[in-house]
Amino acid sequence: MKLEYSRRAGYLSTMGGLVGVQLSSASLNAPQDLSGYDAVVVAVGNSNEYEGEGFDHSFDLPEFQNELIQNIAKVNPNTVVTMYGGTGLKMSDWIEQVPVALHAFYPGQNGGQALAEILFGKVNPSGKLPISIERNIEDNPAYASFPKFDNQNTLTDMDYKDDLMLGYRGYEKKGIKPLYPFGYGLSYTTFGYSNIKVTPGVAVGNTPIKVSFDLTNTGKVGGSEVAQLYVGQQNPKVERPIKELKGYKKVFLKPGESKRVTIELNDRSLAYFDVKTNQWVVDADTFNLSLGGSSQDIRLNAKLVNSFRQELSTTTSNPLPRSALNSVLVEKPPVKTGGVFKQTVE
Image (cartoon, rainbow, N blue to C red; front, side):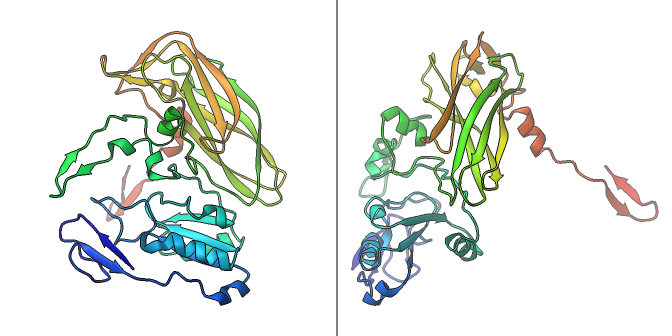
């Protein structure tokens, strides 16, 4: 049995209960006949009862689901956990006891079909985490500044002192290793990175900076890899993250296939915002370029030099390099309005 309370005004559980309070019960014992199955799929996580706009949710899985996973895994070691929710949830209690975990977030109407195709091997997964998942909530870099409420549901303390040092940037600053880092994601195949080259090696104005490398599918099945490019300044004059994601590219490769891949940067990729001048600034410095499969899985490193300080306009500079801008440009086809003259609207 579990009694849960929400500070939301007028909260009424969709499953019934008192305003502000929900009482739930569920069997945590795994049926013994599960041991005879090839595998067991357990669906856990949040729903509209436990998270949504305008209120916080617990980091723990609801309704003792963590214990349910552990009990099922004891009966059948081939337990597959699919987790649902809009953010990270605590996995460290049970993740070492199961061979497979898949975070589906909220996959929509065809989510069941998509998950089945992944689990049965019809589709090779290629998703990457847009967040870091900590082992314990206290590990979160912003934990100390979480909103604080009093017994009258009044917000007593709220600050944004962490600034940019949130997510993977905060973990790196504080030297905390998350359970799963930003950008993490497994595949049924493996990928190799090699032969990185930066052209030009010295930044010149808004000249495109092309970071090229060879990406190889070193496994036995076809699959897609999301290569991620991070940039960090060696000697920053203001506080900056150790590295920041500045570009990425998703590439499909057949088994044994290699492709030369290029990710483009520009001057804004190196810049920070100077509150004194209201300009984007690029210092004269050396910048570290890190390339890999996640924020913690760095395979290749290179350097880029900016020889002189630059100030970039907030109105004319663009965080997207030219290649990315061209890829999102949409040309509207002429629209024939019909009528006697068959006018064409450009």
